[in-house]
Image 1 (spheres, rainbow, N blue to C red):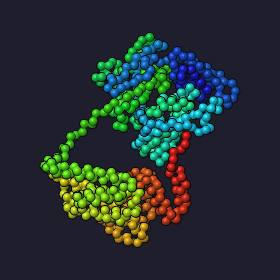
Image 2 (image 1 turned 90 degrees about the vertical axis):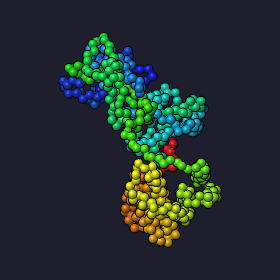
Image 3 (image 1 turned 180 degrees about the vertical axis):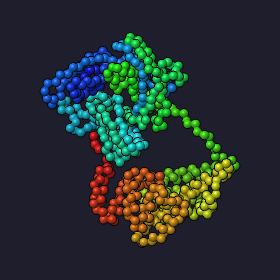
Image 4 (image 1 turned 135 degrees about the vertical axis):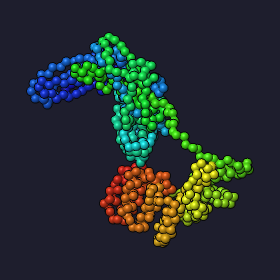
Length: 567
C-alpha cells in the first residue's frame, strides 16, 4: 500500500492525500504519479498489506518532475482575450504540450424567497450552556430539462467541517412530486434527477440569529457534466491567439527557463448555457520524455474556468415578414375596441378569483348585452363555468356556454377557408388566416369541453344517453384528431371506457404516468399524477386486477407525498 500526505493550511486531508494499493509480481516495476505542492513537506509511506503472508522486499525511489505554473488556476472571461500562463522548469528539461478542456457546467441559483429563521427542537439546546440552536431554511428551484445527474455546490459552506463558521449545513433534494432524491453536505456527490422541476432545501444552523441573517439570500451553484467536452486551443503568442494563428506545437523547455502559454476561448458553447454561467475543466502542460516512466503530467491537471457571456442572435435566413393590412379604422372605433378589451380583461381577472360568481355573472350579462357574439367574451364564460373546482356542479352551464361559442362560428365558412391555400404575400389573406386559426382553436376547445361535460352528465345521472357524447365526439373529430395528441387524453379515455376497451385505457394511463402527465398540460383538461392514478385505479378495479390495485396503492404512499421530508 502506498500513502502520501501533505498538510496544507485550511484544507482537508483529502485535498493533498494519495492512497493506492499495488499488486506486484516478483521483479515487477510500477510507477505512480502524485501531484505535490511546492514548499511543503510530503510524507510518503510504503507498507505491506495486512493480509500479505511472508516477508516482502520492496525498493522505492522518488523523482520530482513537471513544471511550475503561474497562476495555477486560470480564469477566462468572455471577450477577455483568453488566459496567459507562465511556465517555469526548475527541475529538469521538459517537453511542453498544452492540453486544456472544459468538462463541467455550473449555473448560479438564487433562493426563490428570503429564508425563514426558526428555533430548532428542544433537544437541540446545548447542554453545556443552555444556548438555543436556530435554523435557516432556504428553498431553491430549477427545471431539469432532461433526466440526468447534478451536484449542488455551496462555496460559502462546503469543504469545511470542524472549522466551519456554522454548526452544520444540509441539503435535501426533491422532485416536483416532493419525492426525496438525495442529500448533500460538506462534500457533495452527484444526485440523479428526473426531468422536470427540482427543489433543493438548504438548512443552516447556528446559535446566533444575526449570523444566520447574513445567509438569507445565499446563492448556490448547480454543477452538471457537459454532454461533450470543449477543447481550448493553446498558442505561443497573444497575436496568434487573437488572430487565429498557428496553435502550440510540442517544444522543449530547458531547465531554469520560462515561457508563456496563451489559452484561447472555447467555441460552440452549449445552447443551454446562459450569461453568468461558468464552464470548468483542467489543463496540463508538461509532456515528458517518452523514455522516462510515469505520465509526466500533473494528475488531475490545473483548474480552468470560463465565464459565459451574452450570445449573439443566430443569423438565420431572413424570411419575408407577414404583410400587415393598414389600420384604416377611425379614432372612435379604436377607442371602442380598447374599452371592450379593458372590460374583458377585468372579467377575466374576476374569473380567476374564488367566490366571485355573482360579480362575474353580473358583469358578463352587461358585456354580452353590449357585445353579443363576441368570441373572446363567450370563451371567457365557458372557461369560468368549466373550472376544475366547481365544474361538476355546472355541467349544464358548460354545455350551454359551449353551444354559444359553437353557434357564433360559421363552420361552413371556416371549412371553406382552410380548404384553400393561403397567400403568404397578401396582407388581407394573412390577416384572414390568423383570424380563422383563432376561430378554429376556440371551436375545437368548445367542442372538447362540451363532450367532456356531456360525459360527466351521463356518468352522474346514469341515464345511458351515449348518443349525445358520440355526436359531440363526431363533431369534434371533424376538426381535430383526438387520438394523435395527449391534449385530449380525457376524451380518449372516456371513449375507450364506453367501448369497453379497458386494456387500451390502461396502456394510455401507464404512458401518461411515465411522463407525469406532461402531454396533457397544454390541453383543455390537464391531468395531474393523482388524477392519472385515480383513473388507473378505477380501470384496475373494473378488471378485478386487485393485486395491481394493491401495488399501486402501496406505491402511492411513497410517490404522492404531501410534505417535504424533514431535516
